[in-house]
Amino acid sequence: MKKILNKPEEYTDDMLRGIYEAHKGEVKYAGNDLRCYCTAKKIPGKVAIITGGGTGHLPLFLGYVGEGLLDGCGVGSVFQSPSPEQIFEITREVEAGSGVLYLYGNYTGDIMAFDMASEMCEMEGIRTASITGADDVCSGDPSVRRGVAGIFFMYKAAGAEAARMGTLEEVLAAARKAKDGTRTVGFALTPCVIPEIGHANFSLDENEMAMGMGIHGEPGIWNGPVKSSRELAQESLDTILKDMPLDSGEEVSVLINGLGATSQEELYILCDDVLKLLRDKGIRVYRSFVGEYATSMEMAGASVSLCRTDQEMKEYLDYPVHTPFLTMLKGK
Amino acid sequence: MERMTREQLPDFFRSIASMFAGHAAELCEMDAKLGDGDLGLTMKKGFGALPEIAEKLEEPDLGKAVMKCGMKLSSVIPSTMGFLMGSGLMGAGRTLTGKAEMTGSDLAGFYRGYADGIIKRGKCSPGDRTILDAVNGAASEAEKLVKEKPDAGFGEVAAAAEKGAEKGAEATRNMIPKFGKAAVHQEAAAGVRDQGAVAGFYLAAAIAEFGKEED
Image (cartoon, rainbow over all chains, first blue to last red):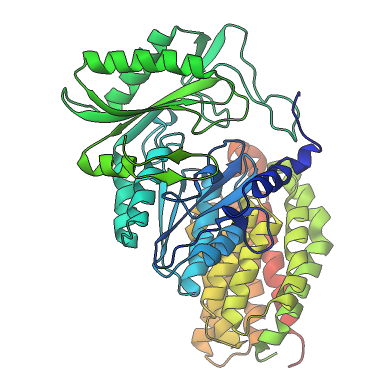
């Protein structure tokens, strides 16, 4: 293991201390617990949106806490769920009188933690609603699908609707709309190392890749020789479009996401191939997002997401956002 | 004991904590054969933390206090068992909200709520060979007694629940495991009590022990 750290068991908390020091005034923590990550700019009367999940995916999950996006994030250890208590503490801190939306990835531990927190909130008279991101087409039936980079579109839609002072029902509907219209296919070229374990949990040969692998190294649909960018774009789009058919003339937005160790150059090569193929099919592209949106520490690889983009979704996507990790100005 | 008060909550958990401390090695040994091998330590650590947590809680409502202890239990032992035990306590606490004390019939509600909390979180049913079989047994016997004798005291209902939990745990010997490592090693599980159900029995046994105290 070659990593910049002090003690492996302090990886998450040391990272958090760095973020709070570097971005004072923008984010803070609640309940005297570093893992209770909250916006420092609470807006009275706004629906609060809280996410959560394990460390190791920056800018996911906490990087989306900020203006025009989310209000809080439960931070677990590397690839571990936050606790129900932490989510409850965050909820009490950021709740601003109009209810709270829990928006997180479809993973068993996270579901249990958020559900327990929401039962506690019910007792305290705080209204909550929950929705999970489940966009990874290669991880099974829609009900069990894992949440990966496509949750970005859910954050963007729900965040914009909440910033426009929509009700809890409206914010939930915005998240649901993005969820229904988003699909992702990802693939890995190298594994990553969990600091406390010290070595990779699986290995890939020099010329081997894993199609459909999850962002915690969950097995994919095939392991085999590394394919060209064009072939990967083709296979990713075929898989997505088989699951979510699109007609010629329909409009989408594209997210080309790097898993941590893949260069921006490679992401743009992949982007070019994806956009060409979409053009050939007559599918129009409203916006393309290229960069790191959901990583797996130093894993090499990428994911391709498509999000159906109608007029309402265009407004959500073009709504300005600012967090310590992401700034998007108004408009395209 | 006729009724348990909010002030006795730390003692209530102290009784459970000492029961699991005493049976940690036995539960671990059972779990090593059909699970991860850490069940005894998990229960000891989780319930061991609750007396102090309950003492520090500034929450006069008995139900909300029990719910908060359930939520905190899951933080102390962040595992599937921790989530299930915590959810059980939250479900139990929910039945006590608005109350400052627990009578015999409230205790029957506590066990039913505990079982419901586990069912909701674990998506399991009675007969699946889990801790639920013991807790469900405790709830059923407690409810039966309360139906026959509505003014039965805490201690009396707690004793009935212990018997129900014992029967429930005993019945798991002949159940086919659906979850965890036991589901993979079904032959090894045949004829043996489920270790989770045995843990559920110790929970009820500890509450019965606590119920023997004078008011």
